[in-house]
Length: 479
Length: 141
Image 1 (cartoon, each protein chain N blue to C red):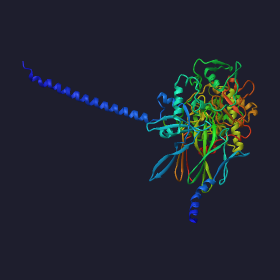
Image 2: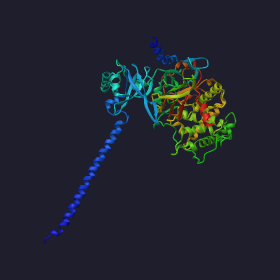
Image 3: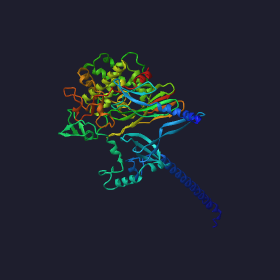
Image 4: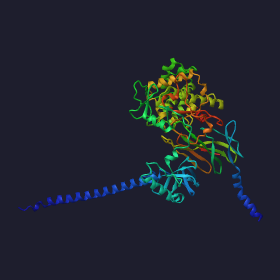
């Protein structure tokens, strides 16, 4: 039987197969192009990004602080020199020449041969981040010394063991630059052992505090702040409507603040007051479109939505929680409030402005770190949706009542403190007393918590006051 | 010869005027102030327990700009503060104090996050944006 009449059927599939093959080929080619393009784009994005150097040898380079033995020109892209031509802006970075003796740390290099560098002064203080060309750096830095140091670091006796590399080249490890000068240390004794600042910080990581002030080994990692899932936590919802600006009235629960002194029987009302304040300030423009808090407007609201007594209360209450963090210790809360009161009193005397209160002192730029934009503290305490545990509320209000009824005049001159885990490098220690803890009597001592969390100082000769911040501008903006 | 001398003198006059303005920090009973030979003194507020120190003066046709280091501040996150004191050059009048630079200080435990303070310097004005505190300034004579 002749089946040739069916050839077309045989060819059709053949033709069809060819089309499929062609299509397949086109698709594969396209995919190859797309993949190639994707790799190219990814690579160029990666190459132009100033991310840290990936190569292990080069990543060690970023651990070194290298002295300049010839001048090095650097560019500061945060300080621009600009021209405006026909409505178009043209800017170039400000250029500076670093002199011999200054040190640099090469953080990263981009595709165009530009180094991102951190500059250190002769005294070892960081001067910030700049950019320079690889060509300039090649001339200005002693690369043979750098390479020798890197080979030492790569050897078994190098990094990881005891780095003995700061010999003749003047090259330091970054970790060596971080240590800073030796400062007076607060001696904390446990089992008659004297701990250093670093050891105290480590202790805080490894041990937790019992209610009686004793320490027990931690079974879980140290939380940054008390967990919000504590039972009986006081939470609140964010009201939709914007509250009117302060009109002389008190917010619900805050009437107790009319009295000059906070009393024991006012504590329950003041718990309501805390939440009323948080709700009043975190509304309207204090929320971004995504629901997060807008720091600038939130702080502004603290002046526009609260009356002066509520402002002072909020300054003391929220700052002491944010600054004391996990210690949750009455004496520590009292100590922060005391410093705020001292700063407010100092400013009132200096400026003759009776409006200045503890909130002005607390929100002065950069002073109380919890209010810095990048710190989480301010969100945790000011957001009405975040819980503050009943225990913390009780402790802080108790601290406030006790502070108002205790003679603390011996600490009237305490304006400064810092956490034990930070080490100021350039403080003029001659201007300060030795660090101390605060003892309010009856066992209420900041040190009693098992390791002083803060070091307090009084000013000595030559120190004329404390920073009181740009409160006039803030108040002007708030009016 | 005389013409050459006059020319030389007239050329060097602006530089002589510039170098005549020297800035220094003076300590007194009231505190610390920034003084110069031409301007009224300006109070330097203390940020922390560090005496303010002049870092540099910047050149601008309309403004005298003096950058002062105020040292490290903070309770758990240390930053070094530098501020610029800006004067009207022709009137020798103080215009204001503005953020110049904020530098994060390394600690044993953490390094604070800071954002840059961006200055855009034009011939007739200066724009400043402190991204840390969401502040914007325009300095005009």
